[in-house]
Amino acid sequence: MEAAMDLMRRMPPGSAETALNALLSLLPDHSLDLLSQVDLPLQVTPPPVTAGLPCASAFWVSSPWKSLLGIRCSAGRRVPFDRVVFVTKCAFVASGAENFCILFQVCMDKENMKEYILCEYNRDADSYRSPWSNKYDPPLEDGTVPSDEMRNLEIEANEVFSVYRDQYYEGGISSVYIWEDEDNGFIACFLIKKDGKGTRGYMQIGSWDAIHVIQVGPEEEGAAHYCLNSTVMLSLTTDNKQSGTFNLSGSIRRQMSMTLAVADGHLVNMGKMIEEMEGKLRNSLDQVYFGKTREMVCTLRPPPEVLNMRLPDS
Amino acid sequence: MSDEAGAGEPLSDHQKREIAVWFLSNAPAGEIHYVAKDVRALLGDDAVYEAAAAEAFPEYNKAHLVSLELPDRSGDIIISTYGELDKNDYLDPRTAQVATVDHIKQTCTKLRPAADEELPSAYIEEFRSALDIELSKYVSEAYPKGVCAVYCTNGKDIEGPGADFGFAVVISAAKRSPQNFCNGSWRSIWTMEFNYELQFIEIKGKIQVDAHYFEEGNVQLDTNIDRKDSTIMQSPDDCAVSITNIIRHHESEYLSSLEESYMKLSDATFKDLRRKLPVTRTLFPWHNTLAFSLTRDLAKELALGK
Image (cartoon, rainbow over all chains, first blue to last red; front, side, top):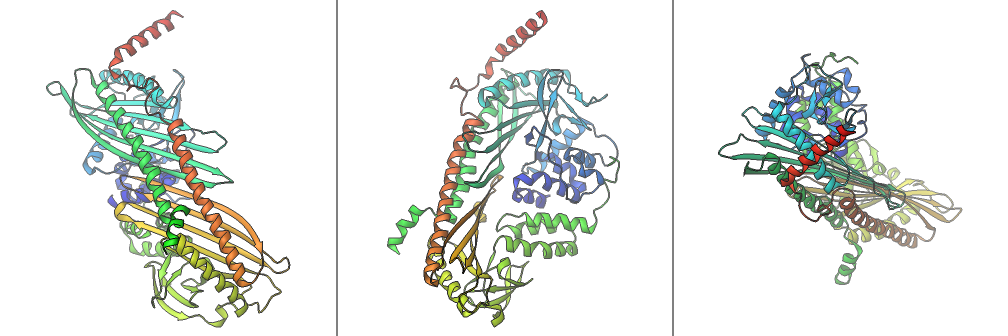
């Protein structure tokens, strides 16, 4: 698994999906581990078919979602939603390993005319549960849903987070999924997807995908322990005749843990942690994405001003 | 495409090899050994790994213009398609030697002087070495860790003026900082056709710059550009100077354009994607969930009312 993680840190971020599929076919026994550590960035158009890559079974040539499901359900039975999540959390916590990212899908909840994000956390077999209607699409007779208490929290979280998203992102799509944890705590997953299509006569495609998974421990003496794992995936591309192809993409992740009083409710605590985390990640993006890679380019070939200063000395 | 199809079926050796080759070929500059180690561990089958490595390493080395130290320490040799005489034999035009390389270990195993048939004629060599000298000066000034080579791609046996010939210039610079989780590479390939009749040199170039940062994440920069230019045919020394100036000009220009891209994207991202603070210039009022509940209830009532 260590080898698999190291590979995911080196493969081009744009090919992360292909890389993950390859790893899944090489390590079918570790599929749950691999899938649980995948942060799925979000895209509005269906992901491209990963043709040309050999796979464990015939149905990999269809959409990557189906193929992931295929591996998961290798024994021919449907793995129940909460069981999957339990294993997911275990693998996550046990190995403390990094997340890596491939692209997600977004679906339209026709009942409420709102979009929602598809990910492992709201999937059961081949269907995805909308956080707005709490129904599966395609419909599922006994699809797993959160308990009433969790569902109420989920409804409120989606609404509030939607406003938060609007304030900071001025657009985009968000979804929150909450489910019970085994020890009387719960897990909440907050997802945001934003696509930017810059204009200014400069052909540019950008996207920001954020995934925040908070594990909340059981309430003890009026306080609870919150463990947040966040990943932001950013992709920026320009392609024009003048400046050629410029593609900068990848992901960074951070962790934050706090014990807070539950007096004002979980949502306030979780919200504040996420807000603080996003602020930090945004700054990191500036330093990491722009700063470090730009520094590398200048190290490879220092700008002329630096050279001109050097020449008189030599 | 049925869902019950053997998801538990083991992969064939051929499939495993294809996967291994894919991983190896996509390794970022300077990282193929790390990737190789991981792939070898994952495959658990040395025979398949060696077959994949034998296929992937040579292509990787050529694509990344890997440079290896010559056994006699006379310099470096660049592995490129232009200098390839044979799968494992590469010409170093500067020292007129041929090195046999082990692609997987990325070392030179043998060295021998180049045979006359492998080298250009004296006439061509005049142009080639003049260009090589000018170019080496430029590369050592511009790139802290750059190497370059000039190859004759066609017409190497031409004895005197009257016919066309072609050269390829290869520049490669790499920076490895694995302890800082950062690696990068600059590769430029310039091809030029010397046209005798028109007394004209047509130049085409492709520049590729990559960087990889992987502390707590995986960020990769991947850029490339194509350039064209031309100049008139002159004496070998004058040609060398004007060609090198053209290359210098385009490469500096590209560097500035990369800087510009960085500035624009930096502004654009933070405008188009996420604000630093909401319009209210205060943090989000999480405590006001009560207000949201009220809004929600009101909205529901209004909807029902309709």
